[in-house]
Length: 326
Image (cartoon, rainbow, N blue to C red):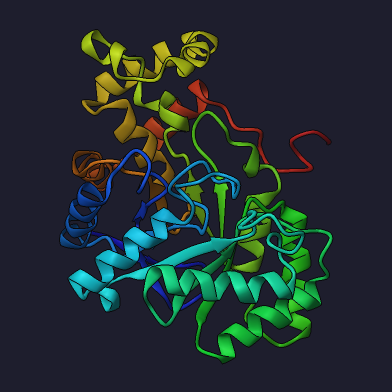
């Protein structure tokens, strides 16, 4: 396993991180335990969750609420491996039907963190991430709440998710004014089919020393390639429209992957690992086999010609303002 600093922090995280959104939903507890055991064996030390993962991600459902964190907590208690992993989770989404059971107010952050700690059966969260930007809450209030959680030893680092470039800049400006570390990571949608963040978010992350954690590296399965044979009955029918819309690009991509001797999924993840801003990528593995396949991407070396070929198939937008102005 390879490791990298999470942004400008001194924290080292595995280049492949384990995403646990499927735990409690597509992956039951027994299989989730197998996946986490294997992750540690492979050297994966970054485990990512969120308070809403494990079900429909809405508080008015009878089940599936916070299940991912509960499964991780059960595994931590059984395995005794808490100190072997960097534990990350998130807050923002509705965790109840009350008006303050969501978003990033100091009121909610305190309660959301304490509830996650109970479900995770631990006394601290290594990386506490804001699941979405909340422009209705002042940054001084957010940072005061986060600083308090750090002081109490409940969290160590703070990260963001689904922020725009100017949100990163604003957050860091207020953190600097308070003489605190601020953000060390941003978790964002990023893959070969969706490179929008290259325009403004990645330059902002680079300037502020914030590490990028891409989610959906396979574009919800599109970059695993078009299903063949028996796979047609396994892969979700919901992807059929995307396969049709991207037919020409996928054809060229699959041919290129065949020439390299690797699967489309492996190349998609290897490409992300070659991007300088990326600290670790989220492999939302439902099974041990999927996790092992993600780790295999670490061994793939894409040279300059290969990266240029992928840029021709899946062109990026370029950096602003040069991407749209002289």
